[in-house]
Image 1 (tube, rainbow, N blue to C red):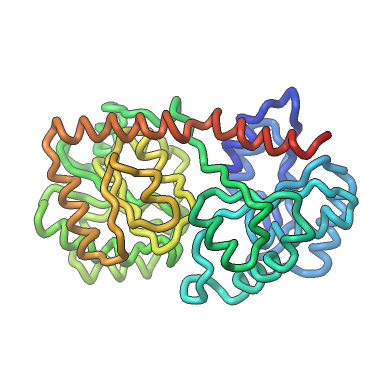
Image 2 (cartoon, one colour; image 1 turned 90 degrees about the vertical axis):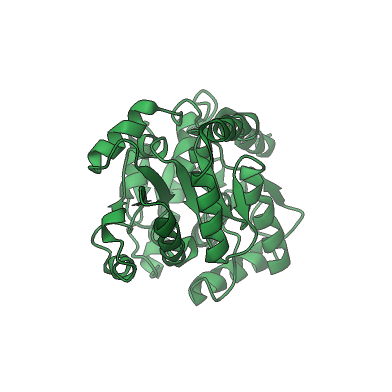
Length: 358
């Protein structure tokens, strides 16, 4: 979403600059391709030192930004403090997470979020949450409720479109028959994304539908992931799973799926669900974060985290007849067009920025 925002913002009014607390990374390279400068602090994951903070502070003082918009917990805390110490008072925090339980987060993440909650009345001017559920969760956690506004993720409906060509070409790439059914899970490898739970549900689906295959797309979910490979081997379905890892052709892959699965334990506002719906793909999702709200009546929402029920929902989605699938596909894309189209969402961010510059 950061990439989409800086790529689409009005460059006559705003000059975006991105700072990564770690390295530039794949997304940073994509952002640079849009003629947006990207600076790297070079900190290691899970370890942010005093020298790294000093480097960040010096960089912010050098850039002298009018607004500092930080994106997630560590950036909210460290970037917010660096901005304040540099004399910038127009600070916007980002909330992109809806689960603050110790069960699903590192203790260090919870501690940083708690520090943010304590500082929220003083440090940020505004806090932008990507979902209503995330807003409610953070208010209960102690964040200043008077500062939180909700701006959902937006989707480029001209990039994510239904495509018969993509549908066929991905099956050729995977050496599958033209009529093979594909269920995709597009997410980084992370406990909250529930890849293991999906594998359990997939084994139930595969026992009923011989032609179905399952595709994992996302950082860490590639063929070198030994944990995923071991879990899959226990189901004896190795030939039915395709672990693609990080890919740059997400629009192509999305429009090749018959079903997009989101079995997540926790979400803020899922990008993959919206991208799949814009591509005309039927989605099966757990009702976490704003996932149920995104899908509405244009897909299948499982109200709990029971993977047996999730498997049954996938079966219902895969067994839709042609007319029902076509109707739901059109409804899904129309819902994204009407509620979450990217230019409308970017306009909301621009309105927030403009409100701080007087």
